[in-house]
Length: 504
Image (cartoon, rainbow, N blue to C red; front, side, top):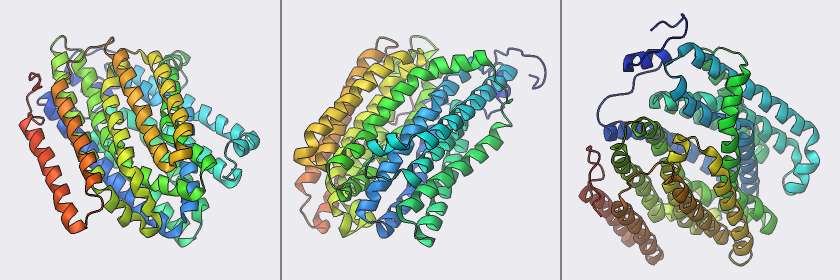
């Protein structure tokens, strides 16, 4: 297929690969493709998280819990505006890739149009907020000075939102290695800038915000250099409108998702001392590792779902088999964190942060429910029914806020953690009911129930042995992990064959 001629169509697999200038996905069974991709994403995510873990002891050594609480609020602000400035266009690129995959010239114009529009929109929006938003932010976040924290967070969000388009392209092409390398480069740059601004210059919370901006802008420049090889800078209004039509509802959905994971820190900052916000932030950062594992599996799951779902009736069973594999991976990580969360808090924070240990297993449960949600929501994206997502996500966010307001006064940071569990549970249930009307997947209900039950048993048992000496508790915890792996083997979770009947 010509790379410079007029737009042509190729119906072959080789034509598809040439048309997008990408690496052809590896062959083999669907479960094999999923396992290889998710393991690659997972390895990269955990290496990235490993770099992130290097940041935690740096923060706890150079920041007081109160300063770390400010960092948590600034990061929540950054993540919110990353969603606003991104406008759901990362999801649009991933989905529309499959529509343009056989049309190289049109795809290059589409990608260039989306990226150019996104960069202009984010820059203008961040400039307006930096110049005229002081009053709003001071009322919303009275414990966090507007200058320099908020402008730094806003411009960092511009870099993160626009640079993320490249990751969407890698994900759609199933180029897991390139995706992971870019993410690792981002994490490594953040580590380097934190070492400079926080450790060398002793900049405290301000130094962390400066590091966030520096890393984000550096990765934006790298992403732009790589995207110029794939896209033709332009503004095709029709293509931008198509992307916005898909991404607009996703933005509302993602803002609701942001409220699910960030409203607790903002509300805590108004209701408890910043020292407790810092403890909660550390415990949350450990518990959220489940989301890292789930996102790694989801990065492999989504393109495979789109590919398999077009094959016909047999796809319902194949996807159900892959869903069990997806969930088993995430729940395995969740079990490790539930069992060894207290040890991680001691290792990363020391005695000053010991109070963070109580929230880790609860946050883990919440993000285990999110892992199930990632699986359940994919049919909605496949059918392009993204307008159905905002009501569910906004409702879940509202429930999260209400639960936080109810539970924080009597229970403090532990109440905020349980509010996360309740909100994610509602989001999962509502999304499953909506998604099953769009594309029915034959989930292996028995297998999923057994995996969930095992996770619950691990949670109960770890609380029962929480007061034991490490010499006695750690062997029991390791035995629980081995039992989980044996159960997965017994259920044939990692069987490379697809379409097996539900063991339940």
